Image 1 (cartoon, rainbow, N blue to C red):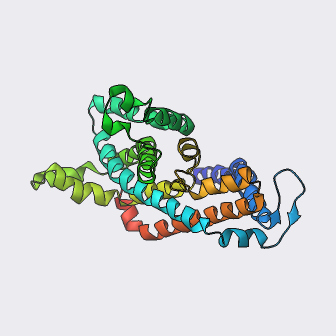
Image 2: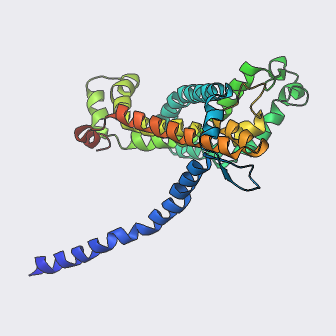
Length: 300
């Protein structure tokens, strides 16, 4: 009798679960699906952002796909993505593993490391732009020739500065992800390794890294997809220059839409960004190859 009465409330509560997800579904549809559909429809029109919208078929798509600037912007975007991933991932893993320790000072360091993520990207760009000024910046003030270079006026240096600032800002976030992943690794694995005489370096490569496989996939997905939307920092710091050395696809979309008043081509580039991000996310998910046995082992 008691089992029947206990099942009835569970069934009734189960009926309300879909309704609890409705607010999130409404927000997702209203702020993600509908704007995406609108941008896709806008890519088949001609619009200057103010006047009437005129359907133009594939005119905007032809203009974008035949523009030689598109492959360049796409190449710069992928280059920023690859280099920033190569810089952020190992440093984030090392910092996350270090902060997963139980010493009290590591918790304080974790808070300090997290400060860059709380700052605005535009504010960070303005601060670094002032610090790197060859005439009035940090190098000129300290009279250090190495720091007095034209960091934002030379293509190679400007690209390196962008990657450095992006990594400096977002490494704390990914370190936090890896810190949580390391803390979920069973302590018994490390105890068994210590009994076998394995040192910390051997434990890191034999236990920590393999156990962080799916955490690396998750972090890499966020890192790769997020790099497609880099705009405000690059816009304030270099405006895509010098030349087009740092003109990523998101910045190209802004310049076409809001500076050249070509909303149709800008919308086409926005659709391309969405498709590229979706393809990369699916590729990383497939590379992860999550299976039930491995997922149960990780974070057990």
